[in-house]
Length: 399
Image 1 (cartoon, one colour):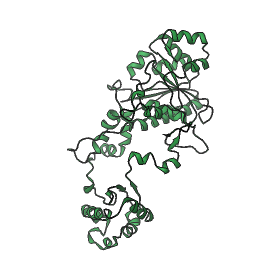
Image 2 (image 1 turned 180 degrees about the vertical axis):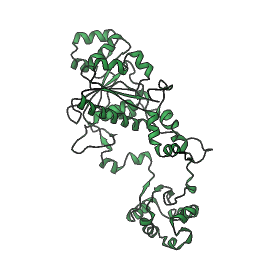
Image 3 (image 1 turned 30 degrees about the vertical axis):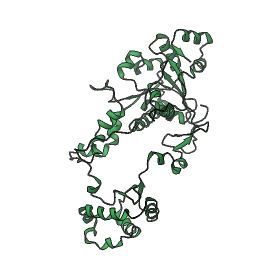
Image 4 (image 1 turned 45 degrees about the horizontal axis):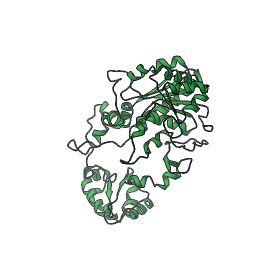
C-alpha cells in the first residue's frame, strides 16, 4: 500500500477467524501494509467458512482479508519461526488471537517478540482476558461476547423464551474495532516515548461494554428484569409496529413533549390528545397497553412506504426493519461509504465503520489465495532466490 495515513506501517496478521484479522483489515483500509501469516496447506481455517451453504465463494474471507498479502509459513519449524523474527525487525504491529498456551509453544508470545523488536506493538485478542483462571480458555464471540456477558439472556422476552443466537461476527467486529483503537493508542504512545508494548482486549470485555447499561445497573445493586414483549413495553411510542403490508418499523419517540402533537396529527389520531388515559407522560406509561393496541390498529391501515413518508414529514424518529437483502442494497449505505466497490469493480464489500477528514481509504483489493505473496514478501525482506527455494524444499514455505 503506497497511500493512506498508515503508509509505511507494516502489520503482521498472525491471527485467525475474525476479531484479530479484522483489526488488521481496518489498518489496511487506511494504507498499512498487512502481511497475512498462514499455515501452509489450507491456510487460515476462516477460509473454509462460506456465508452461504453449498457455495464455494469465500464471501467472509473477502471481507476480513481484503488488501492483505498472504505469506504461508510453518511457524512450528525453526526455519519458519526464523522468517517471522527476521520480518519483525521492520514490523510495526503484530496481531494475534491465538490461545495463550499456543503462543508460548510457538514462541510468538509478547515476551518473545518484544525482545526481537522493542518498538513493536503487540496487538492481542483473547476470549476472556490475559489474567485469571480463564485466561487460557478458548472462546468465540458467540460464547464469550454474546452468551457470557448477559447480552444473550437480556434480549429474551421472558426467562422461558429460548435464548437468541448471535449473528456471525456480531461481537467479533466491534472487538476488532476496539483492538484497532488500542493499537492506534499504542502507536501514539510510541511516537511520544519510542516504546512499543502490548495492546490487548478481549471478547468478554467488549461484550460487557456493549451490555454496559444493564451491567452498570446491577453494579449499583439494581435488579435488572428481562425486557418485556412489545405489548408490555412501558413506552408505546418507542415500540415496533406492523404495517398493512406485513412490514415492521421501530419508532423511537423519546421527546414526547415536543413531538407528540405532530405525531398524532400525522397518524390522524389527534383525538387522543383529549383522551384522559393519555393526557400526561405518566398516564401514557400507566396505560401503555391500551395505547399500543390503538397504534397497532392505526398502523395496520397503511403500507410501510406510506407511513415512512408521513412519519418523516412529522419529524418522528423511526427505522424500518430491513432484511439483509435490503441492507445490502441500501443507497444511503453507499453514499456514506459503508458499502464500497472492490478495486477491480467486481462487487462491493463492507468498509470499516469510520472516516477521517481529508483521508481517503484505500480501494479494497481482493483477499489473497494461500501463500499468494510468499516469495514477494521474502524477497522484499532481503531473502535470496536460493534461500527461498531452500525454504520451499524443506516444506516450510508455500507459494
